[in-house]
Each structure stands twice: as structure tokens, then as C-alpha cells.
Length: 293
Image 1 (cartoon, rainbow, N blue to C red):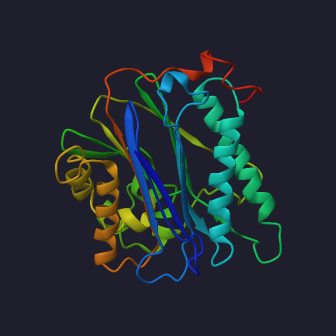
Image 2: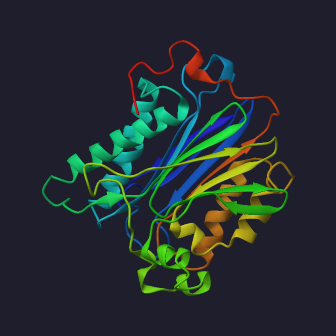
């Protein structure tokens, strides 16, 4: 079961929706301009063929980006980043999955940086959070203040660290997390794709279990929907209320919309539905064809 919808009329990247139920996982993503923004500068995408994963030529990849730089710039940055990383991933971008993921994000950074040289796009950039699965592990590449969460046993754990001035101040114990929520520096990023020719990329590895739910989201969602609410909704995936990630993703976006949604909202929900490992595709069929770092 799968589906994909794009509505781009007068809304930048438009309202995005995709979902699928596969052999060892199910996933869905939703992206909405929000209640107050005329355009959607977020973008999301996935590479997850609808065949058993032991026949995949490339591992599954899920990507989310939140563009910066205003109309006709932020929406370009996020789309270029997501489309580039998906293209590089399916072409082959390195050795082991974490190396291939890092190399693909570097290529995405270069693509956004080059696109920013065009008239009217100077200064544009984007956050990017991407996730792949190998064996019994989720591997995440992260730049910016979009987030990745793990929902397990009724709890929601943040896996990524925000690259923002306010988050740095929290880590230095200059302000509390509660103060950071409304701090003027909350939206000042210390890292993004496209701002410089090279970018520092966080790589996070997280062991996964059957029934785990992994969530990627932009700040338009996590700023309005609490971790407890994410845990409640995503922890119920597989129940009559939320039979698949598609219903969970739609509900989370609806929660943000009901609360005014001053920013674009994007969420990607992935549920692990098997205790079996995801085949380490790099050992099969020359998964990656070029050297990478």
C-alpha cells in the first residue's frame, strides 16, 4: 500500500503527502505551509522501494529539509537539498552507509551553495535531517534545527542536537530549556546547508527494535507539538486509532494547524515492523560505486 500527493499551486513546495506499508517498515510524511505562511519552504522525500529489502539495490532513505531565505529562495534550497541527496544516494555515494550518507549530504550542500549564487537567492540555505536503516540500526545525518526523535515504550527521545544559538546557550548552561523556547536566538542557526562550500555534519547511530517509531520533523511541528504528544500519537501507531504512520503524521500536522501554525510544518514518521535486520546493502551488488568520506 502506498501513495504520494503533491499540491504546489501558489504554495511554494506545496502540500506534500506520501505513505507506504512495506515488509519491515511503514512510513508516511506530510508537509503543509501552515496557517500563516503563503508558501511552503519545507520539503521531504523518501527512497523506499515497495519490494522486500533483501532485493533493494540501495538502502531506504528518508529526508526532511526546512528552507531559509524567504520566498523563492528557501523553497528552492530545501527542494534542491532533498532531491540531490536522494539522487546521490541511489547513484551510490561512498563505502559503508554512514559514509555514503555523509557524502550525499556534502553533495547536497554543494548543490545548494551553487544554487545560491543565482540572482535573488543569495543567502539561502536549509536545514537537513536524513535517516537510513542498516542491520538493527538507524543512521542519521543532521544539520540545522530540524529534529529526529525515537518513540519507544511511551517515551519520545530527541536523537539530534539543534544547531542554533539558543541551543548552544542551553548546552553552556547560560539559559534553561524553558527560556530557550522563547529566546530571540532560538531561530538563529549556527549550521545550515548552502551557507558555505563545506559543512560540518552530525552522524548519529541509534539501535532500533521492533515497534520503534522514528520521527523527523521541522521546527514548525516541534515548536507547537510537545514530545509527550508525539510519544502518545506515534506510540499508538498500529492501533485502531492510528493503524499506520499515515494517520499519525496527519494527526500531528493537524495539531499544529489547530494551534495557529505560524511556520511551515513537516513530519516524517517511520515504524519498524519486523525484528529482522535490514540487509547491509553495501555488501551486496556494489551498493556504492564511488569512493567517499
